[in-house]
Length: 172
Image (cartoon, rainbow, N blue to C red; front, side, top):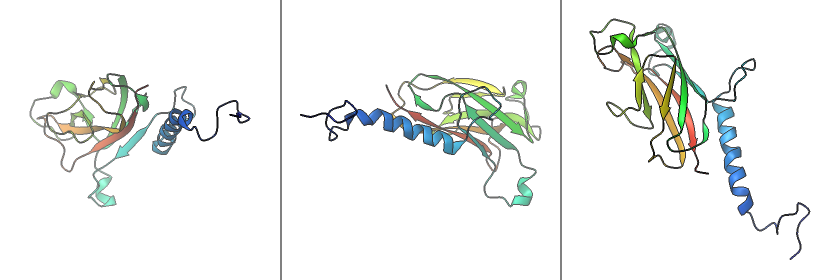
């Protein structure tokens, strides 16, 4: 059978395009969700900033704000270690006060995978950079890491304040 000009088999054989298309889709998703600043010497990262969504714009200005980014977001593997960078405005992160009485504007965060909530978190802390390992049971496809702010007494802020990072899991 004649070969096309690229040196690959007939054009009807599209199996060679599967992996490149998945990586291209992951790259586009990364670009849509944000990249590192141009002056940073890091690879593109996905990031998200979110405040409580049911408040008016005027009252949101005094609510905490969470910004999250990850060092890896696409073609991640089960059990991969990912470093999250967490930045919070209008709220003091203090790991030494976890479990103590509430103090307004002070607390910690929890990191959840997808729709997990409550005590089903991957990690908790107050450090600006946090390494987490993905579970070995994670499936291929899109997943979300959510960083949710919590009070000292381990109750979530109300209304909830969180940042999100999109991950693409793809086993090579």
